[in-house]
Image (tube, rainbow, N blue to C red; front, side):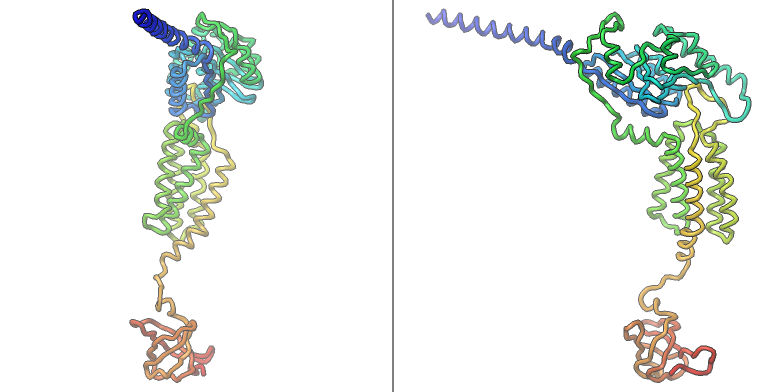
Length: 450
């Protein structure tokens, strides 16, 4: 009887272990098929190293969560070629299918955006969006023919390879690079440049559901959306790379530097100038910069500085506005041909006018007043009484006491004895005693006040 019970216990244990093994083997598979999330990433603005870093991090999260699909929301005028190529490589190497969706309505995928859109397993656009315009542009007239041809040839081959891989319209994407062509969303659909036009994200997923990518048919009915936004560091650095923000940082650096020069000594203004200049030049490193324009801005800073520290403030401040305006207008307009991935960027004219007015106002009024005040001899305690009028409360022969600002002070007359009740003027301070002289009646230098 004991043996039977023992065998029964062994059988129960064996069945339990077998059941646990079966559950542990089956449940991950069931979880993978039923609870695979859809990761949604959002790239908005100029393409730079931080958007590339953000995409890599998002794809890593998608892989860790065994996502069924990644949707990359895209709205960009273009950006750095190196960052664009890094993002394209990440998309092409991703084991998880990626849908690149140009949205919301009114968005664009131009310059670098065209290449990123072509890299997606599925290319989609919302109504009232556009794609294309990826031709190198340089400031002022004709550009070097050899450099232009080289840039165009390289970009054309790259975008053709992407279109060929995704079986899209190779001829049109090449023309978009060579001739700066653009298409609306529905035109792109008709031309075979994209596969889907969707009103919004829900409409997009409804159209993707059931499609076959890499011999796998999508079933998104049980998938839930998970939005992975930029973290604080990525968002901060991505924000300062916006042209107007970068220009604002440089302008504020100039304003703080002028404030520091008006009252030297490493103060909050000095620290602020260093900080704003560092952030501003970090942003310039990821934007197409005309360094001649940077030189003009530097010249304007020198003129503003000389104006502040000399008596020619009005003339030189107005003269400094000329290179300031020219440098601001041309700051992101390079003279040499750039990559087709780069967008045409401009600083807002209203922002330029505002910063110019602010700098002139501070230079001519506020900073000038600070500079004059800093040159005055410091006065505190008894020294602050110099030049003021006091009344004699005890005869000065020559020592006695006076009342000034409702306070009694020891005083010494430097011009003979002075009787009680007369008014005197403080000329200087000796120790704790005021050196005074009789205050003369106006228009009668020989008559003293009684």
